[in-house]
Image 1 (tube, rainbow, N blue to C red):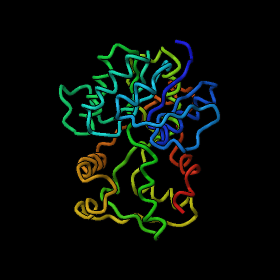
Image 2: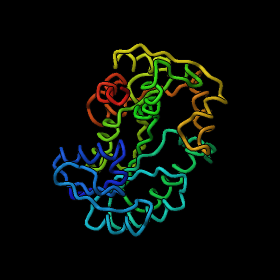
Image 3: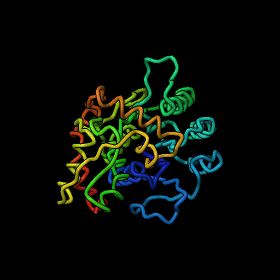
Image 4: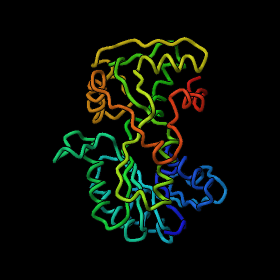
Length: 281
């Protein structure tokens, strides 16, 4: 497939913005589909105003595109099927930012986040296009939900301080995505994408303190209190808290996917903090 124009959905999100930037660095024309057409993108980016949940908007945005980067930040997988159908009729390759919660060993996905991502995956595999799935096992950027607490004081309150995760830098997810968008050898791959290290919530809070030059500490609270102050929609809070509870004793180990695809080591959490320390001040 020639390196023609690439459609990027979620283009103002943490990962999508990086995909647009890295495509530009590679000399590839990007088309950013966004509900924020006034957002700033690299020179040469074609900005298309529209809602990625709308098949009509996607139909217009995919005209003349060869490949597409798809994110689906909604539990409504029924709408995704219509979008994928329109997208697949116009592009030859789709790279989907999926979830590490999807487990191919299960006949049916029980966990809600896994369920809707798996439904989007099935829509793509049945659409007759080349595809690659990036199953992310935690975003370093999700740590930003602690920023209000950190700006207000020296304590981060939450449940499951000993829960350990392998948080991936959004630039690494984008780097894997860009290579899959531009190179057909990644067709049919389901990459389990992680950061390079396991860190507990307690360790992450300590690292943020070191990065901003101010000692921080974790304060363990009950699950009920954590639920009440959680940043996610109520429908997802218990799902995420269940995941964190499981990660106390059974964290998902780091993978080599970033290095395997990009030939560069995955960025550490402290490297992510070097890029984001001002967000906590």
